[in-house]
Image (cartoon, rainbow, N blue to C red; front, side, top):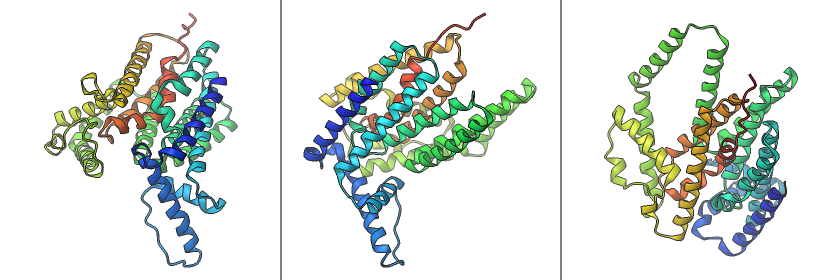
Length: 369
């Protein structure tokens, strides 16, 4: 755990530096926006106690939760608020460590994984040092993975407790980001269908028919078309909200000119996913920041190759590997559809960094025959 403690100290140092010298920098734009919204909500709560008729338009639940804490504990300090991100990251690292122990990783791999978790992605270190949602999403996603793993081997009493905690964790994730709502809906629906698939003696041909009919209905009922235009609308809107001309994956016209077809639907989702994982490509690098992101993407690509290799190996606990992989893949796929530039992508990768490392170094002991 020495790497985790060093990681915490390092993040505290970054937090203090940023809070004293870099507030107002483009790096802290969203962080300051959340902080100011939290102050507004805290003051709204104070004024509402005097005038109950006051109303507040909630745009994001993260600053609302933070503003409630401001109101209760009577502090509105950016530095102290950002230090909370350090603590949340530290707690996420403890949960990450518990997962490593739970799945019987070797001691040297545990130490390596903790080092990677704490330091390997520089942008992750910075983002978990700021007042942002990502450290909290990272914590709750790690926690969700931990309790899902617990359920498989727990007694009935503990299983009930785990289910209650999973419900609470899902509730927190639900309100932290709109993409999490889609993740939770698809993830738990998929788990439910898989449970039915594994536990009921349904003929194989019925299962195949069900899958084919489900895919057909997605297209026939226009669900995929609605998803397509929702993604298109979201991406287009971000071109107006921010000015990321250098770091955008594509031009505004590339999005507005798209019309729905099955091919364009698959193409858009695939392109978004590849851009999200690996942009900036080497021919797009034009600054030190881009070079840093390129190095992170190369490392991410290596990790993904390590993960894919494990699909052809037989080993114990492969069900947990599949579970963690599905969580990682789904989380990244959904966030990819809500991202238009590689700067934001680097921040959106933070919540799944624990899953990525867990999967890359997942223990592959051969099954005994």
